[in-house]
Image 1 (cartoon, rainbow, N blue to C red):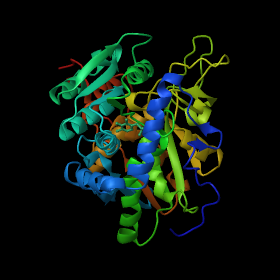
Image 2 (image 1 turned 180 degrees about the vertical axis):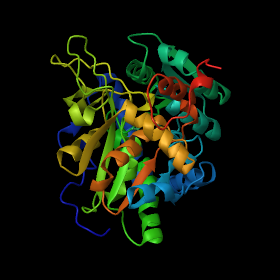
Image 3 (image 1 turned 180 degrees about the horizontal axis):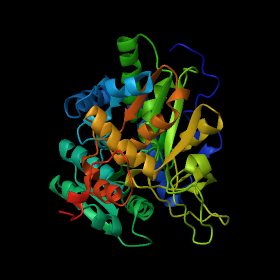
Length: 422
Ligand SMILES: *Cc1c(COP(=O)(O)O)cnc(C)c1O
Protein backbone atom coordinates (compact mmCIF):
# COMPACT_ATOMS: atom_id res chain seq x y z
CA UNK A 1 0.00 0.00 0.00
CA UNK A 2 1.45 3.37 -0.90
CA UNK A 3 -0.22 6.30 0.82
CA UNK A 4 -1.80 6.93 4.17
CA UNK A 5 -5.33 6.02 5.15
CA UNK A 6 -6.64 9.48 6.12
CA UNK A 7 -8.25 7.78 9.07
CA UNK A 8 -11.21 6.54 7.02
CA UNK A 9 -10.48 2.89 7.58
CA UNK A 10 -13.69 1.12 8.46
CA UNK A 11 -14.10 -0.61 11.76
CA UNK A 12 -14.10 -4.27 10.83
CA UNK A 13 -15.27 -5.73 14.09
CA UNK A 14 -18.68 -4.35 15.03
CA UNK A 15 -20.12 -3.80 11.59
CA UNK A 16 -20.42 -0.06 12.13
CA UNK A 17 -19.21 2.46 9.59
CA UNK A 18 -19.53 5.64 11.61
CA UNK A 19 -23.26 5.75 12.43
CA UNK A 20 -24.12 3.50 9.51
CA UNK A 21 -24.46 -0.27 9.36
CA UNK A 22 -25.18 -2.32 12.48
CA UNK A 23 -27.66 -5.11 13.06
CA UNK A 24 -31.25 -3.86 13.14
CA UNK A 25 -32.97 -7.23 13.02
CA UNK A 26 -35.80 -8.99 14.83
CA UNK A 27 -34.80 -11.18 17.78
CA UNK A 28 -35.57 -14.33 15.76
CA UNK A 29 -32.79 -13.53 13.31
CA UNK A 30 -30.05 -12.90 15.89
CA UNK A 31 -28.89 -16.54 16.18
CA UNK A 32 -28.46 -16.71 12.39
CA UNK A 33 -26.61 -13.41 12.32
CA UNK A 34 -24.29 -14.41 15.16
CA UNK A 35 -23.50 -17.74 13.58
CA UNK A 36 -22.72 -16.01 10.30
CA UNK A 37 -20.55 -13.42 12.00
CA UNK A 38 -18.53 -16.21 13.55
CA UNK A 39 -18.19 -18.03 10.20
CA UNK A 40 -17.21 -14.78 8.43
CA UNK A 41 -14.40 -14.19 10.91
CA UNK A 42 -13.13 -17.74 10.82
CA UNK A 43 -13.34 -18.60 7.14
CA UNK A 44 -13.20 -15.29 5.28
CA UNK A 45 -11.00 -13.16 7.52
CA UNK A 46 -8.79 -15.94 8.90
CA UNK A 47 -8.85 -18.42 6.00
CA UNK A 48 -9.69 -21.29 8.33
CA UNK A 49 -9.59 -24.72 6.61
CA UNK A 50 -8.21 -22.95 3.53
CA UNK A 51 -11.60 -21.40 2.72
CA UNK A 52 -10.24 -18.37 0.88
CA UNK A 53 -7.84 -20.57 -1.08
CA UNK A 54 -10.74 -22.66 -2.30
CA UNK A 55 -12.75 -19.51 -3.09
CA UNK A 56 -9.87 -18.14 -5.18
CA UNK A 57 -9.39 -21.41 -7.00
CA UNK A 58 -13.10 -21.71 -7.84
CA UNK A 59 -13.61 -18.08 -8.87
CA UNK A 60 -10.64 -18.61 -11.20
CA UNK A 61 -11.61 -21.97 -12.72
CA UNK A 62 -15.40 -21.72 -12.65
CA UNK A 63 -15.69 -17.94 -12.84
CA UNK A 64 -12.89 -17.15 -15.27
CA UNK A 65 -10.81 -14.78 -13.14
CA UNK A 66 -8.74 -12.71 -13.43
CA UNK A 67 -10.83 -10.50 -15.69
CA UNK A 68 -8.81 -8.22 -18.00
CA UNK A 69 -8.03 -4.57 -17.45
CA UNK A 70 -8.40 -3.39 -21.03
CA UNK A 71 -7.40 -0.07 -22.57
CA UNK A 72 -10.38 1.48 -24.39
CA UNK A 73 -8.71 2.88 -27.51
CA UNK A 74 -11.55 4.93 -28.94
CA UNK A 75 -12.68 6.37 -25.61
CA UNK A 76 -9.07 7.23 -24.75
CA UNK A 77 -8.78 9.14 -28.00
CA UNK A 78 -12.20 10.77 -27.64
CA UNK A 79 -11.55 12.05 -24.13
CA UNK A 80 -7.82 12.74 -24.47
CA UNK A 81 -6.79 10.61 -21.52
CA UNK A 82 -6.11 6.96 -20.78
CA UNK A 83 -9.35 5.07 -20.24
CA UNK A 84 -9.15 1.49 -18.94
CA UNK A 85 -11.99 -0.98 -18.53
CA UNK A 86 -12.15 -3.54 -15.74
CA UNK A 87 -14.01 -6.27 -17.60
CA UNK A 88 -16.35 -7.83 -15.00
CA UNK A 89 -18.74 -8.37 -17.90
CA UNK A 90 -16.44 -11.25 -18.87
CA UNK A 91 -16.95 -13.05 -15.56
CA UNK A 92 -19.07 -16.22 -15.84
CA UNK A 93 -22.72 -15.17 -15.86
CA UNK A 94 -21.91 -11.83 -17.45
CA UNK A 95 -21.57 -9.63 -14.34
CA UNK A 96 -19.65 -9.17 -11.11
CA UNK A 97 -22.41 -10.86 -9.11
CA UNK A 98 -20.83 -14.32 -9.20
CA UNK A 99 -17.91 -13.16 -7.02
CA UNK A 100 -20.30 -12.73 -4.11
CA UNK A 101 -22.72 -15.57 -4.90
CA UNK A 102 -19.94 -18.15 -5.19
CA UNK A 103 -18.25 -16.87 -2.03
CA UNK A 104 -21.42 -17.11 0.03
CA UNK A 105 -22.61 -20.47 -1.27
CA UNK A 106 -19.16 -21.88 -0.56
CA UNK A 107 -19.27 -20.35 2.91
CA UNK A 108 -22.66 -22.00 3.50
CA UNK A 109 -21.02 -25.32 2.65
CA UNK A 110 -18.21 -24.75 5.13
CA UNK A 111 -20.86 -23.87 7.74
CA UNK A 112 -22.56 -27.21 7.14
CA UNK A 113 -25.74 -25.69 5.70
CA UNK A 114 -27.90 -27.75 3.39
CA UNK A 115 -30.02 -25.15 1.66
CA UNK A 116 -29.58 -21.74 0.03
CA UNK A 117 -32.17 -18.96 -0.14
CA UNK A 118 -31.74 -15.63 -1.91
CA UNK A 119 -33.78 -12.67 -3.07
CA UNK A 120 -33.61 -11.18 -6.51
CA UNK A 121 -34.95 -8.08 -8.24
CA UNK A 122 -34.30 -8.21 -11.95
CA UNK A 123 -33.02 -11.75 -11.57
CA UNK A 124 -29.29 -11.19 -11.94
CA UNK A 125 -28.41 -12.08 -8.37
CA UNK A 126 -30.87 -15.00 -8.41
CA UNK A 127 -29.22 -16.30 -11.54
CA UNK A 128 -25.69 -15.97 -10.12
CA UNK A 129 -26.79 -17.70 -6.91
CA UNK A 130 -28.54 -20.51 -8.80
CA UNK A 131 -25.38 -21.05 -10.88
CA UNK A 132 -23.15 -21.10 -7.80
CA UNK A 133 -25.53 -23.47 -6.01
CA UNK A 134 -25.62 -25.85 -9.00
CA UNK A 135 -21.82 -25.69 -9.20
CA UNK A 136 -21.49 -26.64 -5.53
CA UNK A 137 -24.40 -29.09 -5.47
CA UNK A 138 -26.63 -27.14 -3.05
CA UNK A 139 -30.46 -26.91 -3.23
CA UNK A 140 -31.50 -23.31 -3.83
CA UNK A 141 -34.70 -21.27 -3.54
CA UNK A 142 -35.06 -17.75 -4.90
CA UNK A 143 -37.68 -15.22 -3.75
CA UNK A 144 -38.74 -12.85 -6.49
CA UNK A 145 -41.51 -10.28 -6.70
CA UNK A 146 -44.41 -11.35 -8.91
CA UNK A 147 -44.14 -8.19 -10.98
CA UNK A 148 -40.45 -8.83 -11.55
CA UNK A 149 -41.12 -12.45 -12.53
CA UNK A 150 -43.44 -11.23 -15.27
CA UNK A 151 -40.88 -8.67 -16.47
CA UNK A 152 -37.83 -10.94 -16.43
CA UNK A 153 -38.83 -14.25 -17.94
CA UNK A 154 -35.41 -15.25 -19.36
CA UNK A 155 -33.76 -14.82 -15.95
CA UNK A 156 -36.52 -16.81 -14.23
CA UNK A 157 -35.92 -19.57 -16.76
CA UNK A 158 -32.15 -19.38 -16.19
CA UNK A 159 -32.66 -19.96 -12.47
CA UNK A 160 -35.04 -22.84 -13.14
CA UNK A 161 -32.74 -24.64 -15.57
CA UNK A 162 -29.95 -24.32 -13.03
CA UNK A 163 -32.22 -26.26 -10.70
CA UNK A 164 -33.42 -23.47 -8.40
CA UNK A 165 -36.99 -23.06 -7.14
CA UNK A 166 -38.44 -19.60 -7.75
CA UNK A 167 -40.94 -18.43 -5.10
CA UNK A 168 -43.20 -15.58 -6.26
CA UNK A 169 -43.68 -12.76 -3.72
CA UNK A 170 -47.08 -11.12 -4.01
CA UNK A 171 -47.09 -8.68 -1.08
CA UNK A 172 -46.66 -4.93 -1.64
CA UNK A 173 -45.54 -3.89 -5.09
CA UNK A 174 -44.09 -7.33 -5.75
CA UNK A 175 -40.54 -6.10 -6.30
CA UNK A 176 -37.09 -6.33 -4.74
CA UNK A 177 -37.87 -4.65 -1.41
CA UNK A 178 -40.64 -7.16 -0.62
CA UNK A 179 -38.53 -10.07 -1.88
CA UNK A 180 -35.77 -9.18 0.61
CA UNK A 181 -38.22 -9.04 3.52
CA UNK A 182 -39.71 -12.38 2.49
CA UNK A 183 -36.29 -14.05 2.28
CA UNK A 184 -35.40 -12.75 5.75
CA UNK A 185 -38.66 -14.25 7.03
CA UNK A 186 -37.79 -17.64 5.52
CA UNK A 187 -34.30 -17.47 6.99
CA UNK A 188 -35.55 -16.66 10.49
CA UNK A 189 -37.46 -19.95 10.60
CA UNK A 190 -34.89 -22.16 8.83
CA UNK A 191 -31.64 -20.86 10.35
CA UNK A 192 -30.32 -24.29 11.30
CA UNK A 193 -30.20 -25.64 7.76
CA UNK A 194 -30.21 -22.55 5.58
CA UNK A 195 -27.95 -19.71 4.50
CA UNK A 196 -29.33 -16.48 3.03
CA UNK A 197 -27.14 -15.24 0.17
CA UNK A 198 -27.78 -11.48 0.13
CA UNK A 199 -27.09 -9.84 -3.22
CA UNK A 200 -25.22 -6.64 -2.42
CA UNK A 201 -23.26 -4.81 0.29
CA UNK A 202 -26.50 -4.23 2.21
CA UNK A 203 -28.33 -5.86 5.12
CA UNK A 204 -27.19 -6.39 8.71
CA UNK A 205 -23.55 -6.97 9.67
CA UNK A 206 -21.65 -9.06 8.60
CA UNK A 207 -23.21 -8.92 5.10
CA UNK A 208 -21.90 -5.50 3.97
CA UNK A 209 -18.32 -6.35 4.99
CA UNK A 210 -18.47 -9.93 3.76
CA UNK A 211 -19.92 -9.08 0.35
CA UNK A 212 -17.30 -6.32 0.01
CA UNK A 213 -14.54 -8.81 0.79
CA UNK A 214 -15.74 -11.23 -1.90
CA UNK A 215 -16.09 -8.41 -4.45
CA UNK A 216 -12.75 -6.83 -3.46
CA UNK A 217 -11.08 -9.25 -5.87
CA UNK A 218 -12.05 -6.67 -8.54
CA UNK A 219 -9.84 -3.90 -7.16
CA UNK A 220 -7.19 -6.31 -5.96
CA UNK A 221 -6.68 -7.31 -9.59
CA UNK A 222 -7.22 -3.81 -10.99
CA UNK A 223 -4.58 -2.38 -8.65
CA UNK A 224 -2.01 -4.98 -9.68
CA UNK A 225 -2.94 -4.71 -13.38
CA UNK A 226 -2.67 -0.90 -13.25
CA UNK A 227 0.89 -1.13 -11.98
CA UNK A 228 1.80 -3.73 -14.59
CA UNK A 229 0.11 -1.99 -17.51
CA UNK A 230 0.72 1.70 -16.88
CA UNK A 231 3.21 1.69 -14.07
CA UNK A 232 1.10 3.26 -11.35
CA UNK A 233 -2.37 3.77 -9.95
CA UNK A 234 -5.25 5.40 -11.82
CA UNK A 235 -6.25 9.00 -11.05
CA UNK A 236 -9.86 7.93 -10.76
CA UNK A 237 -12.04 4.85 -10.55
CA UNK A 238 -15.69 4.93 -11.66
CA UNK A 239 -18.39 2.39 -10.85
CA UNK A 240 -22.18 2.45 -10.96
CA UNK A 241 -23.93 2.13 -7.61
CA UNK A 242 -27.19 0.35 -6.87
CA UNK A 243 -26.73 -1.43 -3.56
CA UNK A 244 -23.06 -0.78 -4.13
CA UNK A 245 -21.37 -4.18 -4.40
CA UNK A 246 -19.50 -3.64 -7.66
CA UNK A 247 -18.68 -0.16 -6.37
CA UNK A 248 -17.21 -1.38 -3.10
CA UNK A 249 -15.45 -4.18 -4.95
CA UNK A 250 -13.89 -1.74 -7.39
CA UNK A 251 -12.96 0.75 -4.63
CA UNK A 252 -11.89 -1.45 -1.69
CA UNK A 253 -8.19 -1.73 -2.53
CA UNK A 254 -7.92 1.95 -3.48
CA UNK A 255 -9.60 3.49 -0.42
CA UNK A 256 -6.28 4.02 1.31
CA UNK A 257 -4.71 5.63 -1.78
CA UNK A 258 -5.78 9.19 -1.11
CA UNK A 259 -4.73 10.30 -4.62
CA UNK A 260 -7.13 7.94 -6.38
CA UNK A 261 -10.52 9.61 -6.88
CA UNK A 262 -13.47 7.26 -6.29
CA UNK A 263 -16.76 8.05 -8.06
CA UNK A 264 -19.99 6.20 -7.29
CA UNK A 265 -22.37 6.82 -10.17
CA UNK A 266 -26.03 6.54 -9.23
CA UNK A 267 -29.18 6.42 -11.30
CA UNK A 268 -30.57 9.93 -11.62
CA UNK A 269 -33.62 8.36 -13.32
CA UNK A 270 -35.88 10.87 -15.04
CA UNK A 271 -35.41 13.57 -12.38
CA UNK A 272 -33.97 14.19 -8.92
CA UNK A 273 -37.23 15.86 -7.89
CA UNK A 274 -39.28 13.68 -5.56
CA UNK A 275 -43.06 13.54 -5.35
CA UNK A 276 -43.65 13.63 -1.59
CA UNK A 277 -47.43 13.27 -2.03
CA UNK A 278 -47.20 10.00 -3.90
CA UNK A 279 -44.08 8.79 -2.08
CA UNK A 280 -42.24 8.41 -5.36
CA UNK A 281 -38.64 9.27 -6.21
CA UNK A 282 -38.18 9.10 -10.01
CA UNK A 283 -34.53 8.10 -9.41
CA UNK A 284 -32.40 5.78 -7.28
CA UNK A 285 -29.90 8.37 -6.06
CA UNK A 286 -29.82 7.46 -2.37
CA UNK A 287 -26.18 8.53 -1.89
CA UNK A 288 -26.72 11.88 -3.56
CA UNK A 289 -30.16 12.76 -2.21
CA UNK A 290 -31.16 10.26 0.52
CA UNK A 291 -31.09 10.67 4.26
CA UNK A 292 -30.38 8.46 7.21
CA UNK A 293 -32.73 5.67 8.17
CA UNK A 294 -32.97 1.93 8.72
CA UNK A 295 -33.79 -0.54 5.96
CA UNK A 296 -33.22 -4.29 5.76
CA UNK A 297 -31.22 -4.49 8.96
CA UNK A 298 -28.82 -1.58 8.56
CA UNK A 299 -28.68 2.17 9.10
CA UNK A 300 -27.82 3.85 5.83
CA UNK A 301 -28.80 6.55 3.35
CA UNK A 302 -32.32 5.99 2.03
CA UNK A 303 -34.89 7.47 -0.27
CA UNK A 304 -37.66 8.20 2.21
CA UNK A 305 -40.44 10.72 2.67
CA UNK A 306 -40.81 13.16 5.59
CA UNK A 307 -42.50 10.46 7.68
CA UNK A 308 -39.66 8.03 7.12
CA UNK A 309 -41.61 5.86 4.67
CA UNK A 310 -39.42 4.25 2.01
CA UNK A 311 -40.15 5.78 -1.36
CA UNK A 312 -40.67 3.95 -4.59
CA UNK A 313 -37.49 4.37 -6.63
CA UNK A 314 -36.97 4.36 -10.36
CA UNK A 315 -34.24 3.71 -12.91
CA UNK A 316 -34.11 2.60 -16.53
CA UNK A 317 -31.77 -0.12 -15.22
CA UNK A 318 -33.50 -2.51 -12.85
CA UNK A 319 -30.23 -3.40 -11.09
CA UNK A 320 -29.85 0.16 -9.78
CA UNK A 321 -33.50 0.47 -8.79
CA UNK A 322 -33.22 0.25 -4.98
CA UNK A 323 -34.12 2.84 -2.32
CA UNK A 324 -31.11 2.08 -0.12
CA UNK A 325 -27.36 1.70 -0.51
CA UNK A 326 -24.57 -0.09 1.34
CA UNK A 327 -23.73 1.48 4.74
CA UNK A 328 -19.98 1.56 4.10
CA UNK A 329 -20.50 3.51 0.91
CA UNK A 330 -22.75 5.99 2.76
CA UNK A 331 -19.97 6.38 5.31
CA UNK A 332 -17.22 6.87 2.72
CA UNK A 333 -19.37 9.55 1.09
CA UNK A 334 -19.82 11.41 4.40
CA UNK A 335 -16.07 11.15 5.00
CA UNK A 336 -15.46 12.76 1.64
CA UNK A 337 -13.53 9.74 0.38
CA UNK A 338 -16.10 8.68 -2.26
CA UNK A 339 -17.76 11.23 -4.52
CA UNK A 340 -21.43 10.47 -5.20
CA UNK A 341 -22.60 11.58 -8.64
CA UNK A 342 -25.54 10.72 -10.84
CA UNK A 343 -26.64 10.70 -14.45
CA UNK A 344 -30.15 10.46 -15.86
CA UNK A 345 -31.84 7.69 -17.88
CA UNK A 346 -31.28 9.46 -21.22
CA UNK A 347 -27.55 9.90 -20.64
CA UNK A 348 -27.24 6.24 -19.63
CA UNK A 349 -28.95 5.07 -22.82
CA UNK A 350 -26.76 7.29 -24.91
CA UNK A 351 -23.69 5.80 -23.20
CA UNK A 352 -25.08 2.30 -23.78
CA UNK A 353 -25.03 2.98 -27.54
CA UNK A 354 -21.69 4.79 -27.45
CA UNK A 355 -19.79 1.96 -25.76
CA UNK A 356 -21.37 -0.58 -28.10
CA UNK A 357 -20.47 1.42 -31.21
CA UNK A 358 -17.06 2.68 -30.27
CA UNK A 359 -15.65 -0.22 -28.27
CA UNK A 360 -17.64 -3.28 -29.36
CA UNK A 361 -18.83 -3.82 -25.80
CA UNK A 362 -22.56 -3.85 -25.08
CA UNK A 363 -22.71 -2.83 -21.41
CA UNK A 364 -25.46 -3.55 -18.91
CA UNK A 365 -27.73 -0.50 -18.52
CA UNK A 366 -26.42 -0.25 -14.95
CA UNK A 367 -22.84 -0.08 -16.20
CA UNK A 368 -23.79 2.47 -18.86
CA UNK A 369 -24.35 4.99 -16.03
CA UNK A 370 -20.63 4.97 -15.22
CA UNK A 371 -19.80 5.65 -18.87
CA UNK A 372 -22.34 8.46 -19.05
CA UNK A 373 -20.58 10.15 -16.15
CA UNK A 374 -17.22 9.68 -17.85
CA UNK A 375 -18.69 11.35 -20.94
CA UNK A 376 -20.02 14.31 -18.96
CA UNK A 377 -17.12 14.95 -16.62
CA UNK A 378 -13.97 13.44 -18.12
CA UNK A 379 -12.11 16.72 -17.70
CA UNK A 380 -12.31 16.37 -13.91
CA UNK A 381 -11.08 12.79 -13.81
CA UNK A 382 -7.33 13.08 -14.39
CA UNK A 383 -4.97 11.42 -16.85
CA UNK A 384 -5.85 7.79 -16.20
CA UNK A 385 -9.35 6.55 -15.54
CA UNK A 386 -10.52 3.03 -14.71
CA UNK A 387 -14.20 2.27 -15.32
CA UNK A 388 -15.65 -0.87 -13.81
CA UNK A 389 -17.68 -2.68 -16.47
CA UNK A 390 -19.98 -4.35 -13.95
CA UNK A 391 -21.85 -6.44 -16.52
CA UNK A 392 -22.75 -7.08 -20.12
CA UNK A 393 -25.92 -5.82 -21.74
CA UNK A 394 -27.35 -8.95 -23.33
CA UNK A 395 -29.92 -9.17 -20.52
CA UNK A 396 -31.06 -5.62 -21.33
CA UNK A 397 -31.64 -5.85 -25.08
CA UNK A 398 -35.44 -5.96 -24.80
CA UNK A 399 -35.59 -2.92 -22.53
CA UNK A 400 -32.92 -1.16 -24.58
CA UNK A 401 -35.12 -1.50 -27.68
CA UNK A 402 -38.16 -0.20 -25.80
CA UNK A 403 -36.35 2.65 -24.05
CA UNK A 404 -34.41 3.72 -27.13
CA UNK A 405 -37.52 3.75 -29.31
CA UNK A 406 -39.35 6.16 -27.03
CA UNK A 407 -36.50 8.68 -26.88
CA UNK A 408 -34.57 10.82 -29.24
CA UNK A 409 -31.08 9.41 -28.82
CA UNK A 410 -28.73 11.03 -31.31
CA UNK A 411 -26.25 8.15 -31.53
CA UNK A 412 -28.80 5.29 -31.63
CA UNK A 413 -29.41 3.20 -34.76
CA UNK A 414 -32.60 3.77 -36.74
CA UNK A 415 -35.30 2.07 -34.65
CA UNK A 416 -37.95 1.63 -37.36
CA UNK A 417 -37.34 -2.04 -37.98
CA UNK A 418 -37.71 -2.78 -34.29
CA UNK A 419 -41.00 -0.97 -33.71
CA UNK A 420 -43.07 -2.27 -36.59
CA UNK A 421 -42.13 0.40 -39.10
CA UNK A 422 -41.16 -1.88 -42.01
C1 LIG B 1 -26.87 -5.94 -9.98
C2 LIG B 1 -26.03 -5.12 -10.86
C3 LIG B 1 -25.57 -3.84 -10.47
C4 LIG B 1 -25.98 -3.17 -9.19
O1 LIG B 1 -25.63 -3.85 -8.04
P1 LIG B 1 -24.47 -3.32 -7.08
O2 LIG B 1 -24.62 -4.10 -5.85
O3 LIG B 1 -24.72 -1.86 -6.89
O4 LIG B 1 -23.20 -3.56 -7.78
C5 LIG B 1 -24.73 -3.16 -11.33
N1 LIG B 1 -24.36 -3.68 -12.52
C6 LIG B 1 -24.78 -4.90 -12.92
C7 LIG B 1 -24.34 -5.41 -14.24
C8 LIG B 1 -25.63 -5.65 -12.12
O5 LIG B 1 -26.04 -6.86 -12.54
